[in-house]
Image 1 (cartoon, rainbow, N blue to C red):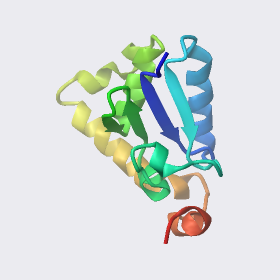
Image 2: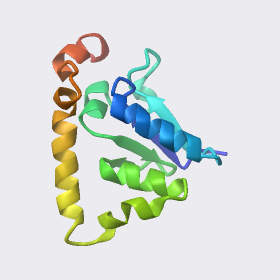
Image 3: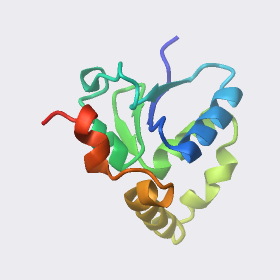
Length: 130
């Protein structure tokens, strides 16, 4: 069975790892392929040319049809696939969705600092193509 979603995540982020662990335990049908972009084996050519730095800037998911989704949409679809779609129901509320996505964009932009990690330039030294 082909996965319905390929979920690119930052395996160096402690909060991301908790989220992934939670989802993996509930993905009993193996509908989601979880790909750690920090793995030495990560090859952007296998994942719609999503570079390490691009993947670090925002969550990325690749749907079964090849469409790329980003940010909260990746989480919402993941939760839907594991039977917990109601968790992200607020994203379907017209006036709340833009606010939640704005908050997430802020988180994505500053998550390395918030979690006490190096900035993207330092992380990219060994990962990004120059």
